[in-house]
Image (cartoon, rainbow, N blue to C red):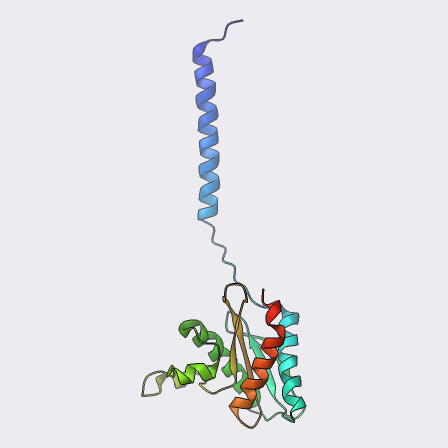
Length: 181
């Protein structure tokens, strides 16, 4: 039985057109996606990290608050020692926020590094008027170990000196760093 060449050509063109339109539709749906994903620590790791910072400071006789902020700058976990000073709650958050946001902007790992690099803003102190920002030692930028992408920040407050707060935060981060894959 002999086929009509025109019908064969029509079927081939129709099949090709269908395949092309399917690929185009799929490519458009992927490229036009309005979904954004971001990475952060899961809640249990964030809580364990903050708890470890409080535990490390407590072992040295310091009652502190530790706060983890995520990649939106919001509190993800807050752990308070038994006898923390009232202001340590807001100060630990501000240190975590500063370490996260300015660590991201200036590629620094701690609030001490930011201060040492002179990243405290203009001479008029304008950055210090932003409610969440606090250029005081005690904040650590949280990064993935594989590609150094920012995951958030950890802030500690309540020890007698920001250097002691930051040491507790750094030791806690070091303990959990291998989980920041």
